[in-house]
Length: 166
Ligand SMILES: CC(C)(COP(=O)(O)OP(=O)(O)OC[C@H]1O[C@@H](n2cnc3c(N)ncnc32)[C@H](O)[C@@H]1OP(=O)(O)O)[C@@H](O)C(=O)NCCC(=O)NCCS
Image 1 (cartoon, rainbow, N blue to C red):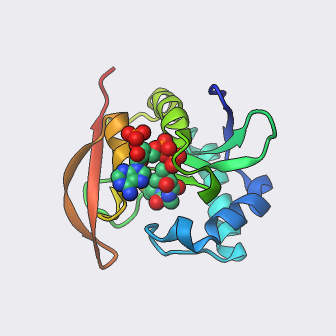
Image 2 (cartoon, protein in one colour):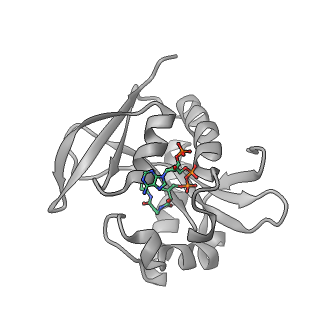
């Protein structure tokens, strides 16, 4: 898929070097469950992303600069485990140098709209750390609503949802 400034492609093992740098950045991973990831953990995450695309037909997208091809970040849907009543999570991870330039907003609308075409369920959730104001701003812009605070993996988190409208 394309947006004005980006090209979106299913996230895969081929993205390892760039995603490894993204998931290895402490500032990026500050509010992400589990924190920074080693290269091996990123390798496993990318293998899981590929399996999800093959098995479900939906998943995470690599967001790349349409001009340079460089990785801006990733976003999309993934399985959510251990959260009662919520089975999938819509999330974003953008490289620090691209923050606050509207990339999540731009890619998020296109990815969410496409996800509804692929995902058969009627409800999509998102989980954010209460201090993560930027992710809150994005989710509100995409139409998510805050459901409640939940204790997830030992930390209080915001649980969000959006319902299918079409
Ligand atoms: C959260 C994140 C995905 C946002 O991506 P982004 O491309 O910078 O987002 P955008 O530029 O499209 O929009 C950022 C919005 O957050 C707002 N924002 C940023 N920092 C903020 C803060 N400290 N307080 C309040 N709002 C803030 C911006 O004003 C903007 O909203 P606006 O367009 O209404 O003004 C990015 O910061 C990131 O990858 N963070 C690390 C990983 C992470 O925490 N992911 C979220 C897990 S769901």
